[in-house]
Structures are given as C-alpha cells and as structure tokens.
Image (cartoon, rainbow, N blue to C red; front, side, top):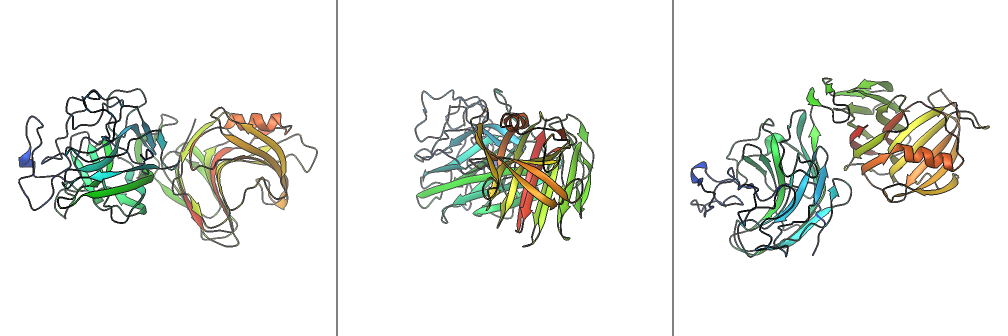
Length: 475
C-alpha cells in the first residue's frame, strides 16, 4: 500500500464535492441521495456539494475529526478505507492542517492511507486504489488549511493577497484528477483535469460545477477551510487510479497584503513589486538584494519574506535574497521552494557575509552559505578544504568546507575573501533551518566568526537557466 501522497494539497476530504449538483437537491438531514439528473455526475457526496457533512465522526461517510482521530474507527477501521486516525499533518506553503484519505460515499472502492507528515516540496504524497463503477466512488486526499497542531477545530484561511494556487502532481495518463476548495461557508469550488507536472491556477479557475462551464466561479474572497485532490469514479467502468502530489501552495498576487506577516505580527501594506538591475532595499520588514553580473534578470518581491527569481545565461551569476541586516545569528528560517529548478549550477539556502573575521589570510571578510539544495555542483568538492561534518538537532548531516575567492565581487567591491560552506547531505527544497547551529559548527571546526552583515535566504544561479519561487519566514 502506498502511503506517501504525491500531493501537496491536503484537505478534509470528506466534506465537499468536486462536482456540485443543483441547490434544490439539498436535504436537511445530510442524507445524500442519487442525483436526480442522470445527464451529469453527482458531487462526491451525492446531490449537494455545498452542504458537506460535519466533522463530528457520526456519519460513516465523513472524514476523521479535525485533529486526525476517527470516532467511527470501530466500525470503519483503517484498512484501505482511507479513514485515517493517525494524526497526519500537512504543511503546504501558507496552508497547514491535519490530513486524511477517503473513498467517498460509495462503498467498495479502496484508497491507500497516509503514513507520515508532509511538507509541500519536500518529498511527495502518493495514493492509489480502485474505484467502483459509480460517479461517487472517489480516491481522495484532503487537508485542513488553517489548523494548528493539536487543534480539534478547523480554522478559516483568508485568500487575500493571493491570486491562486500552485499544484504539481504526477499521475498515470488515464487518471483524471480534480482539485477542490471548500469554504468555511460550506461552498465547494472545483477544478477538473489537473495536468501532470506543475500548474498555476487562479481562483477564477475553480467553479461550483466540475463537468462543464456552468456554475459560479470562486472570486477569491470567501475564507477557505479545507482543500482536497481526488480521482473521480466512472459510472460505466471500474477505475484504477494512482497519483502523487509533489507540491501545492497558495501563490501571491499583485497589490497589497492586508494580512499580518507570520514572522513579525506587523501588517505589510507594501505592494508586490519587481526589482530589475542590481539593487538593495527593504520590503515587508525584510532586507532584500538582487545582484547580477548581466542585465535582463529581475526579482519580483512578494508579501513577507517571499520572492521569486527566474534567470538565464550561460555566462551569468545571479543572486536574489531576502532576510535581515545585520541579523543576530540566532534566526530560525522556514522556507518552501517546491518549483526550484535549474539546468546547471545553482544553490538554494541561507546566505550572508561576516566582516572583521580574525583570520590571518586572505583578509577579514567571509561569505557564508548554508546550502539546503544544490544543482549540478556541490561546493564542498573540487578545491574546497573539508572541515568534517556535523549533525543538527533534527538529525540532518551537513558537510563543512572553506574555499578562497580571489579578486571577485563582494560587499566591499572586488577583493579576495574566504567562503564558509555548510552543505546538507540530503537535499531538500523546504524545511526549517536553525542558523545558530551552523555558526556553532563552524566555530567548533576552528573557523573564526566575525560581525554579521546579513542573514538572508538566497536563490543563486551560475552559468545556467532556472527559477525559484520562495515562501520564507524568519524569526
């Protein structure tokens, strides 16, 4: 049984319907019946996708309780039924909450269960199973989108400041996959036929009906409670489905962000903007810097610590970063960059400079990197000098190294300086970094520290073409 959902989105699946039926079909007691209109498929929970069952566990067709437990496990235990009671937790960009899998209201289908917490962009969530010949037979993975760990209630997430959602899935070609937004008001908005690979969906791409052009479009204002991705059944044949979610998270839109930044608690009223050409400044409480040794590349600044960079050039070096200046060295950085890609040398991680470092040669300036992901070239190889390895509190192993740059661009103009490297053995594109652990490791390895100039999160490209869409908070 495959337990890893290849999908970043998770939603409380038992509730909504990917395809809604007429509002007149609602029943006051939530007893879902067959759709009276045989010309189109019903929603996943019968005739009414806008009146999902409650999360109290009393209805055997509903998902587990908000905290991941299942009141009906005695009658419907974990056994390919998808009613997970093991408290699996998903983090998908600005969305976070407990997750589950489910088979919908029709008995006889199967779905694999979740076995581990998941962070969008860090590994995949995959499910598979069999759907019986019925439109209401479903293979679903769902999640609450505004639910802290330990909470037993769903929260509501405001889409303000965001333009839609990014989804990256893998599937067998014969499997149709849908995505659904479930609002706190009980409405369900669906997107039909997710393509394999990454796709950016705007809020208006979601509608109250999946199977045609009818229905109301989601306007991006109603708070969202849960999301789900699922394979729908077919009334005429049994369906074997298999799909994975690699990444899923809301994407920022243009304009102001009225919501408090999660790291500072202060409102960010600055509009998203694009920086082209070498520049430094502040945005939403963070310092930023964009540097390139060629023209034509730009860095869009987004809400909070978020930013995007796309670059191209076989002979260019480009860095885009957001962070703190000067910083303290005790920052804890949480990041997600599921779409990070490059066809050549590139780095993703923590970056900065130290001045007045007490080293005899070649000077007192150090450029440092904490590399979480790299493409094509591991900087601890080649001519770098190894300083061993160390293990962080969360069990990750990093290789330590130094190298020297001679008469190269720096924060003090072209000059010679030392580089400190801490490179994660197991690459990742999302997670949390305790910066102090790495400064301590360098010091323990005999590498002196100096005065911090900055602590930033960076996307760097060197003689390559690529992009990185970063969601980042620093506290």
